Image (tube, rainbow, N blue to C red; front, top):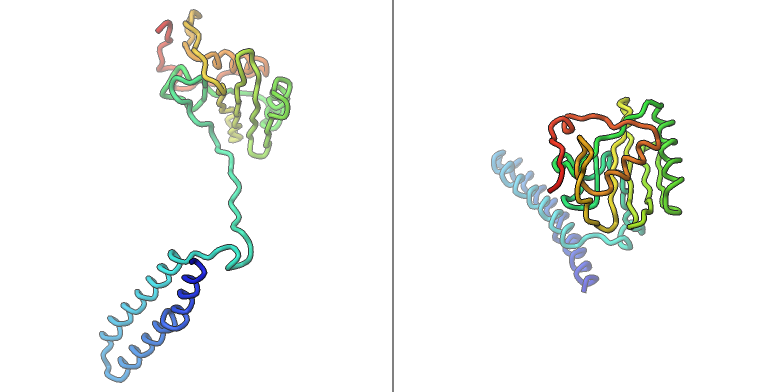
Length: 228
């Protein structure tokens, strides 16, 4: 049983563990002083010190302290911090993200605004609250993070927005459908990129708040895709 093993460990440490090692180190020092053999003291001292370190490590791994055996409090986990940028979309999913550089169909460039950061954040939050599913909006102005779920005829899309707040006046985002849907069959507008229907939904939201798409180097490298 765990209690029995813990009692044995405590007895070993009290009688033969760390106190015993300390007494052996003292005897080594006394012998060295009597014989003048400093090398002997150094060699034995290093071995005893190493043994003490290993003993401490071994007992910490074999007999971890439980909450009720130590301070009487349970461990406290650090709060989860929101990431500073969205994750990329998995290829072939109903999703768009400013981090999906390797899959043009799932990529959209960041948004660019001209307002102050605080004003722009409040503007986007209002736009989301006017469209979002009830009680789905999560906003943290200090962190520059806002998320919401928007309902469409074919299901719900989850949106995440990350304000960089570094003077660039840009917003990163990700929008993903909870259920994957087949992408529209083609893209017939000159310069457009074929992809999931989330592209048009995100672009519609961007136009509604009156912001621009921030041109990136990735945009210049890609060739528009039509029918596949």
